Length: 169
Image (cartoon, rainbow, N blue to C red; front, side, top):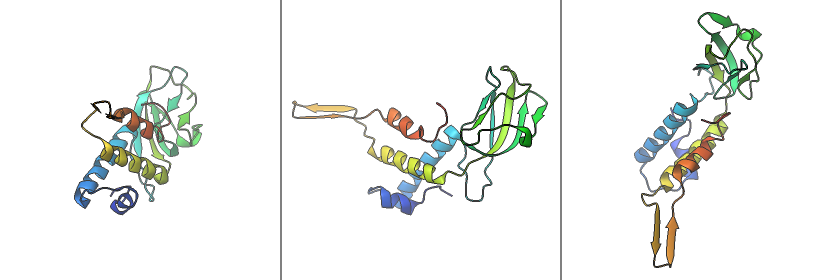
């Protein structure tokens, strides 16, 4: 099920696309968002994200999304830190210096992201607007009377996605 309904998109975005075509764009945009930052938490709070990465040189871990709850944290091959003992800045997705971790240790973190549907909906609507505004033409100039310069669509997309991110991607 989509995070943003077809009705909501129709209300906020003017387009002549059919429902099927517009739903296809909604699904593609939501897939792109999930691929970049992970699954979107739902009202039931049953979405879990597993992140694998390297602990920073100072023993820190940064997540792609704000943390709701931590299910498990494994550092290296067998070091497991119980969720109750982990010091976490939930809103910023930051776990400060994990005791016993080193910069060359990998980690596996399983967590439930915070529920931020309102933020995701706005970003997805804006990304749909960008997708519908894209043109094949980069620029045009007609005898100095008319000129058009298309925005850098990738830069515009990154600006919108940055509203969801806790760090650069």
